[in-house]
Length: 440
Image: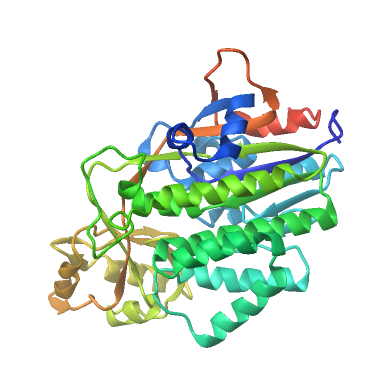
């Protein structure tokens, strides 16, 4: 245990922008964020300079390992399972500390005896927890990977509702009611339901197991910023979302403030847990996109690939427009890659295809209006894919290398605004909390 005999809670608020938070605080919002920034140092973390590396599935492995992209070489979501470098949980476990995690992005569960470990919905790794926790994870994984669809089966919804009721904390009911009211009108609020649920799971599991270190990763803020930053009060640019895409701005509803308020409440609840040192990390942050970009995802990946002439393919959906296509062997994968590279939309290749031997990592790389899918081509053949794609987002927010970190172990100095540190330093900083020296 660390010198202060405290456990550590690491709240990972993916890509949240603390400059936006300060603007909302100035308007009288977010009292718990305000207390943190009033009393503790705001660290500004700096990650990669090269834009293709400014992806959360690249930078969160950096947070968990202390390694830059050039060192860990993880470029795709889910690829962490092919690596063996130590992450923060194993490093602390080796020092006889008990660890836990809820939904860490692109992290592998290599723990020997974690109090609980629930991976993100896109990374195929073990779940550590009781039967109910494992069942809930499988349901969440299915729902997240089909979030762009407008409907779910009665069976899936009923199973999720049953698991939700079993997990429900009575004190969270008022906030759930607020979120459900938003979700009944605005699709983006669905993501807030999941983050509220993950926070409840973490808090109850923490109380039962009392680990020395536990992390919880929440993604609704990143999701909503990407889709709806143009509609928030912190945005001062000229872009706007069309009404067919979102009516929140017209209705006077601020999507970004809504999710920040959820996080403000979760911060208060986590800080009430006894004998804990509290940290917040964002990895990256988002800034407004200067142009309108459309992103799409297939409704049924495998059926579309069959229509395009890609045979023997098994698809593992990843986040947003990404997907992994698995084949029986490298020869079948090579044929699949050749076929997919023949698919064009609006006169340009529709897919970005990365050959991995017996699998392909693919993404839809058409970003224009949906109508172009009606005249997609495969060689000399025209194919209408307009009913096979669903709009994921109009990308309002884009990544920037600046992230943020707050630690209640660092009192704010008089006159201090913020300090800059490398993102790679957070791994060692966490080890130091427990008076652990990183092995040479």
